[in-house]
Length: 634
Image 1 (cartoon, one colour):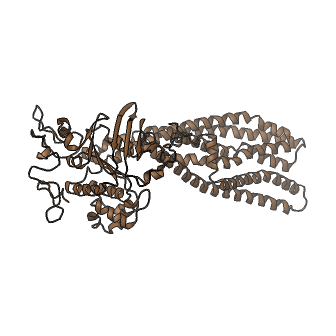
Image 2: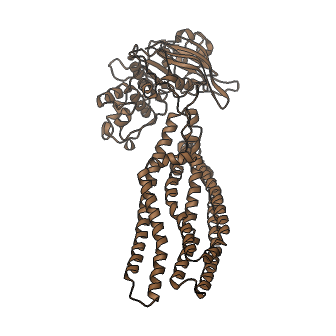
Image 3: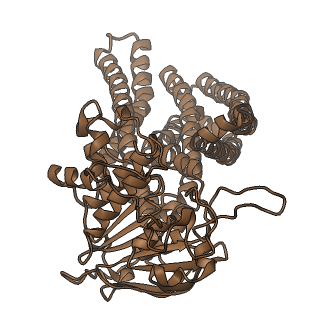
């Protein structure tokens, strides 16, 4: 399917113009202020020279000339102040706009492309790089003064005396070479500095995400060295930047006084010859100072160089193509019939799913099982179009997901994950967050279905407790994620390992809430536990990215290799024991019995030989099997 043509990025001229069009009035005002300040600065030497000539002539005090000089000075100062304020506020607004656009591009793109960059690097680009890139229109608008001043000063010198202007032109080629060298070296050093910053941000993000692992392994000192190791390169690039500035200042410090001396010498000779007057000599010295004062222009060029380097780093994000669609909508009042037709997914040339043909009747439940790396999460992502398959198609009630308008699709598909991101200010905001804001009664009903209402009642302010003040365990976070999915019911509900941190009793109640949605909601559950697979209407068994078998759990249970998914070896040849599951889940199970029973003697339907099940006690309270500890039933 052809991808839409991406919008120009700020790294191109058209991208800069597009960014500038976001705040045209502010940029126009900035342009006027910068131009007004430059014109006032250029008019001041002429007014000052004329006033000096009248004073030297011995006539009355030229009050009008003095007032004009004072007015021009105030105008220059006022315009510069207004330009500074306008430039700062406009840069902040453009930065916010660019960050919003970039984030929107990332969220609208296919996840494998959007998340190709490391998290830390992506964060650095969304923060520091957007600020640098967004300053380009403001710098360009304000650079008018930097260009207008030397050019206008040169014209002023020509009007005063051609020979004086010619003396200044002798050093113009050297000034041009100085500016070009400065701009090129500044851009290179700035790009290297930004890359080193991104590497530090990436390593720091990794360390923060793995803080528990680092503490458990007592490798904090090693991680500290690893995170800060690029600081040496960062310092080198920073020194390079200041070296470039220093060389430019040093060379200009040598060249510019020589040019000023040459211009004043020629102007003095012309004064002695009677070609110019004292006032014109004063004006010529001021114009020469403006012409060789390239500090403002150097600063603008340096800022533009950094902006271009930052814009180039944003190019891969702003050219991300959004997931294509044709504006289709779901079939009204359909049950959520899901079809995967010859679906294949690849990443970095490695197949993750291959030739998956799967049909899930509307309103039924499907458990997706398989060993670690078999493609379960990829199938869950494809089923709700969190990513597009490289081959094949996915249909919901006969409508291709690739053609369905994203906003309408998201109202029909709800997700819950193993590690949900909790968004919002309070606990209630988190559950209500979604394609639409769930009302309070729906939030509380969803919390009860996810068995989250019990621990929420113990929080300081209940549902109004700020997330920052709510210490949550992994299982409690999962229950909030489940409640969020339950609060936004659609025709398709996908649980991607979203029950992995729940204790047995809580999982039992959540499964009952899922079963209550039978008939009007299709449920896909990435399952690790035997009980989840046994309770589903059908099971999809994945192996190495391929669909090995589908069917009812009790049918698949006859296959020893299927039973092995939910069991572990009791020992190895050398006597070691293995307490993990085949896919990394933690079930605490033992080997499958010779009679076909599962872990702990569990039957294919998830019950034990004595008829017990992970269910509430006979008094209606949340009981638990006798093997559960008090911590597991909390």
